[in-house]
Amino acid sequence: MTDRPGLTPSQTVGPFLSLGLPWPDGPDVVPDDTPGAIHIGGIVFDGAGEPVFDAVVETWQADPAGHFDHPESSSRTGFRGFGRCPTDGDGHWEIRTLKPGPVDGQAPHVDVSVFARGLLDRVVTRIYFPDETAANAADPVLAAVPAARRATLVAVDHGRGDLRFDIRLQGDGETVFFTV
Amino acid sequence: MSRPAPFSLPPDGTHPPLAYSAYRSAGLRAPAQPPVLLPHRLTEVTGPLLGADRIGPSDHDLTTQHAGEPIGQRIVVSGRVLDSDGRPVPDTLVEVWQANAAGRYAHARDNWPAPLDPNFTGGGRVLTDSTGTWSFTTIRPGAYPWGNHHNAWRPAHIHFSLFGTSFAQRLVTQMYFPDDPLFGQDPIFNSVPDADARQRMVSSFDLDATRAEWALAFRWDIVLRGREQTPFEEPHDD
Image (cartoon, rainbow over all chains, first blue to last red; front, side, top):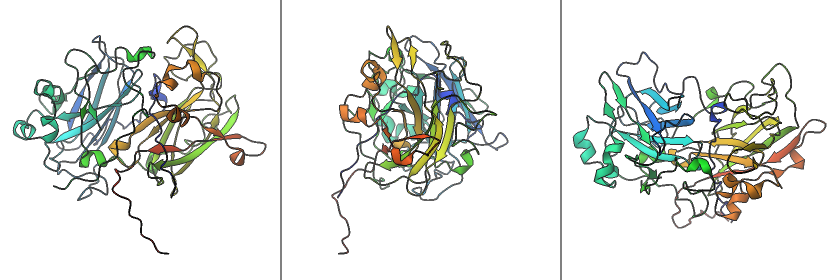
C-alpha cells in the first residue's frame, strides 16, 4: 500500500497567461452558423470597479438535452461544452454556445472558472438563465445561496440571443463564488 | 437522481487563500464574501476531455518553434499527472508558458528591460500518455523583478495548466526549480500555507532523464484531486 500523494497547490496564472492558454476557437463552443446559437459575455470587474484586462474565463456546460461530452454522462454527446475566452483591454469576454438543458434536477446552468493575476486560485461561479424562473426557483444550488445575492448568478437578457453576465470579483454586487 | 461520487476537498493549507495581503495584486481582486459550498453533481464531475487535436507539431519542444534556437540552457522537463489516489491521468492536456532565459516574457505588457529572444515564444502543449507521463523540451527560464515590494524577484518558474477529467480537477499552478535562493522573499510561492505542499511545487534535477551532450533534465509530478474515499476495498487474488 503506497501513501496517497499530496496535492499540487494552485498558483496564480499571472499577467501573461495569453502566452499559454488562448485558442483561436476558444470562445466558439459552437461554430458561428449553428442554429439556435447564443452569445454569453460580460465584463470582469475588480473591487474598484475597474475592468480586469488580464483574466481568462472558462465555461463548462451540458448540451441542450442535458448531456455532456464525457463518459460519466448517461448519454454522451459530441457537443464540446467547453469555452475559453481571455478578457480584452476593456475586461470583456464572450462565448458563442447553445443553451444547456436541465441536468439532474437542476436548472440549466453553465459552470465558470475565472483565472487572473491577483487570484492565487481560480474562482468558480455559475451562469443561470433569466427565462427559467420556475426552474431557477427549484434549483438546489441557487437555494444554497443567500437570496439577496442570487441575482448575481442570473444572466441578463439583451435580446436576440445575447446574454450579459458580468463578473464582479469584489465589492458592491460581488458575484457569488463557490467552493467546488 | 443518484449523485455521482464527488472529488475530495483539498486538505487545509494545500491551496493559497485568495485574500493574501503580501501579494499586492490580490488586494482588489480577491473576493470579500465567503464562498458557497457547491456539492459535486454531474457538471462538476465531468469536464472537457481535450485531445490530440489541440496539440501543434512543435508544441512539445519550445526550442524549435522559430527559425533559430533560443538562447539559454536547454532542459527537458517531464513527470506524470496523477490523482490523489495515485492513479495516473492518461490522455490529459498539459499547457505551459514561461519567460525566456533572461526572465522576459514575449508579451506586450512585459516591459522590464531584459532582452527579448526572437527565437522564443514560451508556450507549449502536450498530452499525457497511457501512464500519465508528459515531457517537453525548453530552455531554463530566468528570474525577473516585479513591482510587488521593494526589490521583489520572482523565482524562475514555468506556468502549468491541467484539466484532469473533470471540472473539479482543473488546476493552474507553477513549477519551480530546486534550491532557488529567491523562494524566501516570494509571496506567490509562500502563499501556500503548508510547507510540504510548497515543496511539491519544486521540481527535482533528474540525471537519468538528461540527454548526453544535449540537455539537462528536471522532473515534476503533478497531483490532482481524487474521488472521495469510501472504505478501502481491494480485491485480493493471492
